[in-house]
Image (cartoon, rainbow, N blue to C red):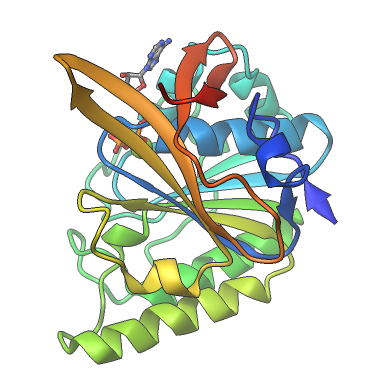
Length: 247
Ligand SMILES: Nc1ncnc2c1ncn2[C@@H]1O[C@H](COP(=O)(O)OP(=O)(O)OP(=O)(O)O)[C@@H](O)[C@H]1O
Ligand SMILES: [Mg+2]
């Protein structure tokens, strides 16, 4: 089954949408639109009745909610309907932080992990927390922002690769369609998550002739006949819009 992202100009590049129950990667440099892409994907599903969960590991959910409220995705309404959930699994730095949205953000989160207060969580800890959310709320669309912030329990690179592949293999069994975000500054340096994911989308944001240029490119999409070109990316009041070939 194909899952529509709802992002204007994207679904038609991948035979109508993402294959369900798989794990995808959206990678790119800072400010390239990764978060916007993923919140649009969740909001589109939520509007169709599919519960979406956005897991943050670095940034506070409140910042993302504030930023995405500028678009017409109805983020606040979907959160209040509990069709769009945000879970903060990053280091707990904001004890005592309270505001009107806090009851919708990780309401039952407890510091049950063995990591220190300022330490990033390990893949196993992140997976455990996510699996609990997915079964409790019947989550169908999942986003993890970002896998670059997951703390490996070893410094050995080959063991880190095993840990990441295991994490992704476990995510595939959750019964939801997942997008992992990864920070990417060097497009020629492939990471484990790029090999292990079913599909990889790069968001480009680069200086060309004194102007910042945004583009999107589908690097791989298993089982799908897809476009491989750099496509221009712009913003509308709905969020990201993918358009024609980059000139
Ligand atoms: N309404 C808008 N119109 C045009 N551009 C916008 C608008 N709102 C945000 N942007 C652009 O979107 C960028 C942020 O996008 P987003 O947060 O999705 O990127 P990101 O890849 O997740 O960034 P980061 O790596 O910092 O998390 C901003 O830096 C800004 O350039
Ligand atoms: Mg982001």
